[in-house]
Image (spheres, protein in one colour):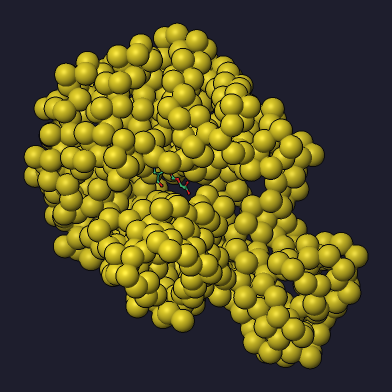
Length: 640
Ligand code: 9MR
């Protein structure tokens, strides 16, 4: 059944233009990269690079990465002073550029990062392309990342800056290139037409609206979920200051193409700015009645601001996201929200959203809802909320799964568990990883794994369609394999979890949904560039204080690999009966002897060479030996 409405088409001309694409072979020709910027500094000039502030740029032959010349940057007095290149006339919207620079310090040590500054209507935004990367004097370091411009701008530059010092820099051998988009296949069935039982959606980033990506999105999907653009950090970065540009563009696109929009998400423990949890004096909130009232007032204002901005344009919302922690006996995640308000943040969020949007469908969304322990804790919470009259309309199952897990039977049990509660159910974030463990990494997806992805899509979509009376939409978490969060989570490695490949061509996974008899008829995409393998790490573990029965400790983690991490999970075993009781600088849990620490929202990014840490309280009896081994994102670390 199609339980929620699509937005009316308002820009028919745009849609018609999108469909007037010449028919192409299913396997379009492979296009080579096109280089748009090359700065080798071999011609005695500064190659069009200019200073960002008062520092001085000059051509140099003191050192060079290739040839004999480089760019010298001297006289810096601020960390953000560095070389800048104007790319306004060079970059086109919707094109994914690969930017590569070589940089070194004249003396000392520091870290450097590569960014883009763009300005729209006089407002500047700074997009990081490569995060802080360790630099030393005497060695060239490469910074390579990708960037897609998704908005109209009047100013656009690429620049390099440092993390902490003002040392003289050298820059050399800059290249900026892109691989032209392969046209999408227009002669294959649209997923949304084949799967008629419920709307099929895709979660997107802003670049997915443009060029061939936009055509793919319009052709195959009934609905759009802004992947990040509606989260608190995007919509209300400072108290009372709302930003909607990215999500507004998605809503406009949806209207133009007759698509619905799923709102994701109003309350989450991640991607929530720090100011939300500061008390009236600017200190971290503690659990007091005053702070509870302040936090709930902020929550209410946020929901009124965001849900109110969109009104009927977004008729379904993930009101709260990931509030269950099945390792807690009561099942409630110990987020800052919970610590300060108990369950009242959930009650307030649903009540206020219902007030703002009386006709919207309000969902509670979570991952691993196929795991019986988690599923049952979520069931208990929804039952409690409904018994209290809290307006919960539906349960969202994220379904971030992999080729071997979960089984169809377990997934069916997930669905049937919630039927007696009389709630709608939606599959909200489906993707199927080619990996079954954190230690695996392939430079390109192996053919047998891609087939298994296809079989998983086949089996799960068949199940969803059998339960179409319960399931009112299915969304995949990404448009195509060129942009998936799984490329950097839980470790950096190339994944292929979606229906279309990195060139936007239909994969066997697509046929798994559309026509399983054709599984095995597609040619895998070529090896992607830029994939990094799982990294290495060093961990220092300290007991900083110990008393009868209890102790305090900390761990310092260093990413000793060449690849940046966008999130981390640290593991160790307490083998002598120690039990973790509290952790800061991340979220910690202990199951049996196994301790798992995940990064906090603010310390998940770890550039090569960068360190972070977490502190904890734990209990002990008998002896309290240090753990003998650690893993970071599944990879063994050296310990000290
Ligand atoms: O796709 C999102 C990714 O770009 C973000 O970096 C990430 C971290 O906060 O969040 C991703 O989306 C998550 C979603 O909001 C909630 N369920 C898990 C998704 C994947 O992490």
